[in-house]
Image 1 (cartoon, rainbow, N blue to C red):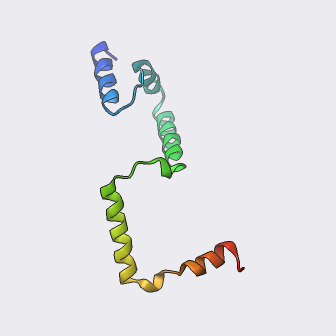
Image 2: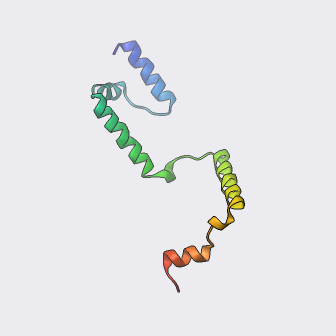
Amino acid sequence: MSRRAGAAELRSVRRLGYNLPVKDIAEIRKLSVPERLQLVGEIWDSIVDAPELLPVSQELALELQKRLEEEHRAFPESSESWESVDREVFGAD
């Protein structure tokens, strides 16, 4: 990788809010394609394991809430009462 390409890559990574040294990216590029795919998979799995850490914009949260409400209005029979869920999850009192 040329020095110019490395600097451009570092700038693009920093623009995304990450501060990875170019040498780390260069090391990743040395991996075979299957190894890089495995790395991507492991990174993805680590993100999926902590969904609560993913940022959700207010706009997205409102849209998801709207869709849930529309789904419930269209198919109210598909919902269960809290009492039913509570009984199933925590057992009868």
